[in-house]
Structures are given as C-alpha cells and as structure tokens.
Amino acid sequence: MGRVTASLDDLPLRDDLRGLTPYGAPQAPLPIALNVNENTHPVPDAVASDILDDIAVAIRDVNRYPDREFTTLREGFADYLGHGLTAEQIWAGNGSNEVLQHILQAFGGPGRTAFGFAPTYSMYPLIAQGTGARWVAGTRESDYTITPEEAAEQVRAVDPDVILLCSPNNPTGTPLGLDVVQAVYDAARGVVIVDEAYQEFAPRDAASALTLLEGRPRLAVSRTMSKAFAFAGARVGYLAADPAFIDALRLVRLPYHLSALTQAAAIAALRNADVMLAMVDEIIEQRDRISATLEALGYTPHESWSNFVLFGGVRDPKTVWQQLYDQGVLIRDVGIPGHLRVTAGTEAETTAFLDALASIGSAS
Ligand SMILES: *Cc1c(COP(=O)(O)O)cnc(C)c1O
Image 1: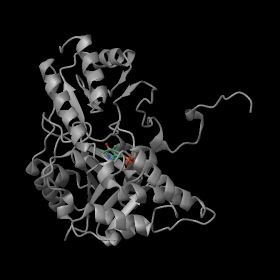
Image 2: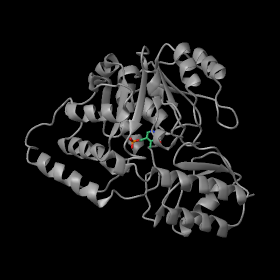
Image 3: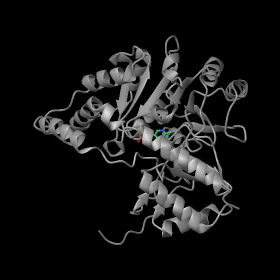
Image 4: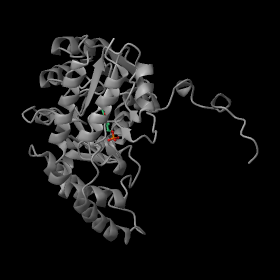
C-alpha cells in the first residue's frame, strides 16, 4: 500500500452517517480505570478454571457451526431471571448492545423513530442511527427523574416506533419506577425496551420490569453480563420478551451470531452466578461511600441505583478529569456541564479516586 490519502469525506458513505462520531470512551492503560462501569473485581480463580474446562470441550467441535438457537444458554438465562420465564422468551447477543441493535434493525430502520429520555445511554442514538432510524431525545426533570404523566405525554407527542428506557439510567444512576414503564407502554404504539443493565445494583426489593412482561407483547427487558456479572470482555447480553418479539429478532440476526466459545463461557459463568455476583454488595458499599465522600467535599452526587455515581458541582470538568488522569485515575466526562461520572471500584481503587480528587481541592 502506498500513502493513505483518503478521508471519510472522500468515501461514498451513507448521507445519514456523515458527521457522526463513533462511540469513544478512552481506553487508556491507567492503574485505576473507573470510566466504563465494569465490575473491577477479576473473575475468581475457581470460576475461571471451571469456564476454561467448558471452553476446552467446546473448542474440539469448532469445526462445526454452533447451536444457532443457543438453547442451553437461553435456558440458563431463563433460570437466572426467574419470574417463571422460559427459554422461548429469551434472546441473547454479543453484549446487550448487539441485542439492542437487533431490536432497532427489526423495529427501527429508515423512516422510523427511536426515543429516549435524555441524558441517557450514549449508544442509543448511535445504534438507532446505524439502522437509519431517527433519534428523538425527550427530557427529564432537573434531578433526572421522570413522572409517569410527563413521560406518557412526551411519548404521545413523538409517537416513536422504539422507546428505550434505561433503568436505572446511565449516566445519571436515576431509578425508574415501574409506574413510568406502564404509563409509557400504555401511551405507546411502538415497542418499549427497559434496559436493566444495572439492575443487580438496585435495592434487593426493587421490582424489575420483568414483572410487567405478562400481557404486554410490545415490552422487552434487556440485561447484560458486562456489569454486575464481571464478564464485560466476554460480550454477552440478553433479553426477555414475548416469544413473538423474539421471533422478530431472529429475522435480523446473523446466523450463528453467538460463537460456540461464547456460549460455553456464558453457560459456565451462569452456573457460577452466585460466586460471580458475590462482589455486588461490596461494590454497592463503595458506591455509597463515594456519594457520601463527594458530598463532604462539596460536590453534588446524584442518587444512584447502579455501580457508578454522577456528581455535579465540578467547575471545570475537563481540567478535573485531566488532573485525575495525571494521577493515574480514569473516570468519565459524559458531557453534562459541571458533572463527571465515576464507577465504584474495589475499596482500594475507590480510595485512590477519592484521595486523588481531594488532593485537587474541593468543589466549586
Ligand atoms: C454498559 C451498558 C450496557 C451493556 O452493554 P454490553 O454491550 O452488554 O456490554 C447496556 N446498556 C447500558 C445502559 C449500559 O450502561
């Protein structure tokens, strides 16, 4: 190859993709990485070797395509979720981002509209636009909550084909009541997705939208193994919905989209769910410690039911972000003026973040 001279503008790119920026959370090799809401506790040794045993068996058969319907894995997710769910109500993909993409491919696409209450997960507009759908951002109260009445009114006004409700919400951590989900569903003509990526970090008695699935064929609840489950690198997300909804996703998925190795790893990890999830309480403890300490430092942490904290009162987020970076601590500037977001890590990582922040000085 000679000189690389082409830029994106020189290529016959789709008009609707021109000017867009790809998802780009920095992946810097810093000692304390608290920027993308991973579970920072490594997979326990005993579980790792159990998973490896299953992968060792699966690899002998990789000359063949894997089970296209990933039946054993779907049974595993149905068992894990409970609520009387069965395998035919379960779907999965390489991360819940792929599951969301399947939804947007099946129910979004050119001429259609996807909707969510901003600020919310930054991938929603990108996945929607990737299928040619239009993204419309609704609004929240100043504390990022939404009332059922206000939510229903916005949904009726926009009349979207796909509605994405993030519960609890990323990047704010805000809980979302089931009354809002119900009101949105009743007001909507399109499909309603409740993204429960962080559900395991919510209070134990907080009801999941899974309890609303019965009798609501346009409702789907998505989950991921990337957060509480400490499995982000394996790329496994899943969803529960009416079997007809699952059939719609089958129309757009690529055949054999979940590799035999992914299926083997996820099945083995699910079998060890109790050990994989053992650190959740410890992470919640660190999250609450972050909120309390930030408040003492004069910042304004927002209520969080997730494994991260969004905090306001940051006079110059870019500078504070850089000063933390220079001390080896990576957090996230999510683009909300006066705010930064930090993931709750191990006790030591959390201490490193809090100490570094305190060394920078207190809030504005
Ligand atoms: C992290 C996250 C996901 C998970 O994405 P994966 O593709 O499963 O890793 C989904 N939704 C939200 C809101 C998230 O923050």
